[in-house]
Image (cartoon, rainbow, N blue to C red):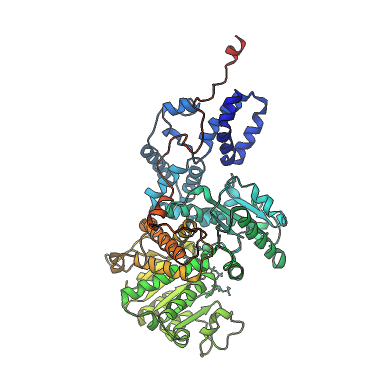
Length: 603
Ligand SMILES: NC(=O)C1=CN([C@@H]2O[C@H](COP(=O)(O)OP(=O)(O)OC[C@H]3O[C@@H](n4cnc5c(N)ncnc54)[C@H](OP(=O)(O)O)[C@@H]3O)[C@@H](O)[C@H]2O)C=CC1
Ligand SMILES: CC(=O)C(=O)O
Ligand SMILES: [Mg+2]
């Protein structure tokens, strides 16, 4: 017996390492049983309750016998394909996308390979369910639906103890964290601790699109309170019920968090900042980017996604970027991130500062940024125009005659009929980027864009819109979302164990994304690849990023792999079932003896 226990020790250790917390509690409750019963219970629950190992009805009868789980499933044995069929039937039977998202989320927790295989096979149908726009509903109903801890909360009250809190995460090896403080979730504003929904969604795309191992990913919410009065008064709110902490105390928590994560998991850990309010987003990026492997998705991921779209406008219209007039509506993380990428691209091409300043117009909530505008953030100072203040966007379009109009405001419908018609008046092929998420906050709909430009617009949007048919002609709007870049950036950074991620990385990414938009798509006026192609794009971006980091001495690894493409590929998550007990989990030659029945014991 002792011998058998010793043989099983590594296996049981791995069991405790991966078991979700409630399961560990279950083990504790088993203390009143004898050793054999405990071992057996652990094995049963190990294979069923760990989403990574569970195969559901795909466990063969032989496996069920061997693992001691016979009888815990109904009699049929299903292949992966059978289970995919059943999952699809379940999804189709549901009445709305939020309900579908709940089903998929539960599948993620209990049966991970099936979940990711389902996502891979149905990615264009599933993206609007697990990501924007439904992720906005997930966040909005987070308190109502909260059930199970699969992510980490670090509260302002944990200051001074963040290291200890992080020890409670069971995984020993984490390669990337996606962290929010809930300050600006999509265009929904301050969502406090409910912002966690976004980090979970982003990290699911790490695996679904870039094939990053789910075990090495940790979604985190820094709960520093919220100024959202509705949430504070909502009995279902799950976060700290206090006003948002700002200033030194808040910044010290972020600092402690960055140090604690890199202390536990190493400097190679990618720290992905998501949906912080704009001033904080820039502050932390500037503070940590030269010493840590940090990435701000809203600034940098969106920045290179936006630039890729501009490069494709150039490919379609033939008008060079240095001769293009841009009108940016909104000057938050997203728009400024794109402006910074555009400036670096134009400078790389030798365009002068004067031309850059002249060709870019910025329209904020109060109107066009002019020389008379006060309190203009430093980063956009150079774009003030020597004209009278102008608060009507349609009039600004008439004044500036932009070729590209880009909105990232979180304000629905501000690209009015007049704005769109003016874009069409000044351009044969106007380009309109309506980047705000979720769908309800888009600056205009695809239908409005095509209708008010006589179908001439090159339109893309942050959230997906269905195809539009006008006078029998079908238009397929492209999705312009940082999901086309952040999974690949993360894949490249993780595989190369990046030290830091300098601006040049994002330039590489923008060009890679642009080049991976097929000529067929461009001919149809689509500025980005389809979501169906997003995983191919993520892989290519990942390889390009890894190559750049290896070749520029930005990797923690001392040996550069000979074939980076193969190297990245070999690190991706395998979607096929593995043996129920793969060799990485040592298992005794003989399965543990089943517990004796009462009758036998009495004999
Ligand atoms: N498609 C994508 O990949 C991405 C999309 N986004 C989306 O972009 C939106 C903005 O995000 P972010 O930049 O971080 O948010 P911010 O809130 O930081 O920026 C929004 C900006 O828009 C300005 N604004 C508000 N109303 C108007 C108006 N009527 N006219 C002109 N400007 C206005 C705001 O000004 P003021 O501060 O004065 O109100 C602010 O400068 C969100 O909806 C988000 O979901 C973000 C990242 C990626
Ligand atoms: C897409 C994204 O990151 C946002 O809307 O904030
Ligand atoms: Mg975001």
